[in-house]
Length: 177
Picture 1 (cartoon, rainbow, N blue to C red):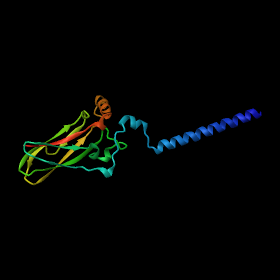
Picture 2: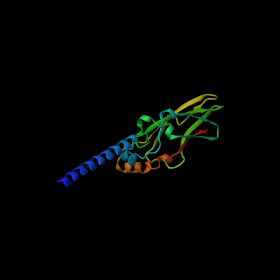
Picture 3: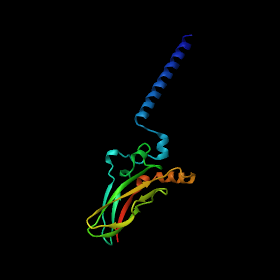
Picture 4: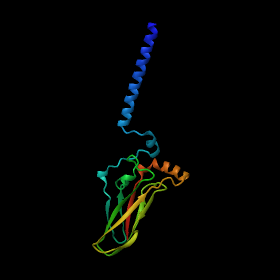
């Protein structure tokens, strides 16, 4: 009788210890904001903090020259489109390029990928070609978007591209004509 009672007490103690350990582990996981499913699906790429965003870039346009400005994608993202502070399909952003010149000149703006961009990644330049007056500044808005859920084939491609988005780099090129 005593042995049966001791066994019941031991089982109850083991269950309580197990529940306490389980509770502690859950609190640790929650405190780290770890979300296994999201981290696997959207790839924890890089963290973007609102205070670091600078969406303005300056380029001087010179006749016959191609001038470049490196753009940091993380600095141009619309924070509201991030998923748990990650750039993933569905994210979008914008930035401004300020063109200047010391002469009246025609210009053209191009996006130059420094490495392979995500297949479904899109840029929209408000005014790709135009005229720039001497000693004037022209503000050009450039928007980007990474659409998601286009179709099953594209979703597979987005997943593949998501693994390399942290390495994606591009520049804006202003060509003086």
